[in-house]
Length: 348
Image (cartoon, rainbow, N blue to C red; front, side):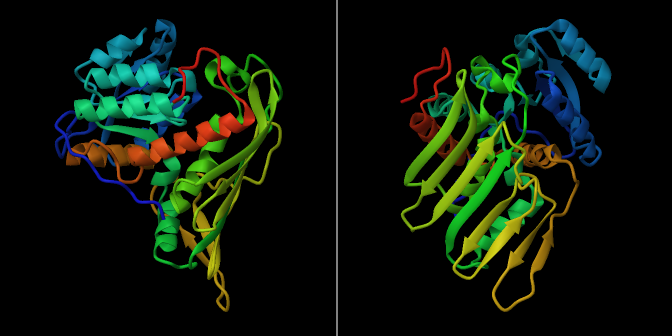
């Protein structure tokens, strides 16, 4: 199992026990709306949505009215400067993550940034260094790592329930009709299957096996984005991870971890499952069910709140070193398939 990393403690963004974390949301798209809705699943008094920002004042105002948010900003600066905001959820397209997160960190705001964390590892390193320099909390919104069922699965693997891990399989594919105006097909927004969907299989493999020694990848490219992509990760232990992602096929969206003494199978929606099954020779299959709210965002929001109340500047569930390792793997895969985005900051 990959290590969880150390939890750093700082002074910025600390939230006192008994006070809700006051959230701001940067962007007003579908995923921002889902986050806003699921904050209500947290226990009463744990979280409060106090501000929203968009590049469009009209969009911010409509979002604020929809969710009963007291402050709406037609620009990011207003949200970053708002003294009532403890933490900002960044829900912009991938290509804007770096600038949005940097602005919030420089203003001393704790940040939960949607996956993929940035377009590439160089951008991710810059943000992590800034957060550590300022002593401000920063976390990638990898809901999978905060999911109760996934956490239990990882614990079983770590405790040797299936022996030594030999292989990981995971796929995430959806069927999206070709439309060059759609964000998933727009290279200027960091579109493509790998960054939007493939980050989940890659993060899943990292959770179980850590950073690979070798990365092999192939993809079908169309107009500057990858539409159907496969990765094979190799590890010094002899383990392998076979991962796929697609924008042109509705795949099974399942995952499996096979070891020397058994295997774990996670059903459709492996990236936010409610259950999984443990298979071991000579025993009946064992089904495990995750505890807590069904919402996917609520677990990561709760983890941010827990960390801020503890004065921690990163989460042991989604450590920054783990985020950087995933970005390095995605970079390596992109090098293999020849994918670079317009205007992208150079990778190291």
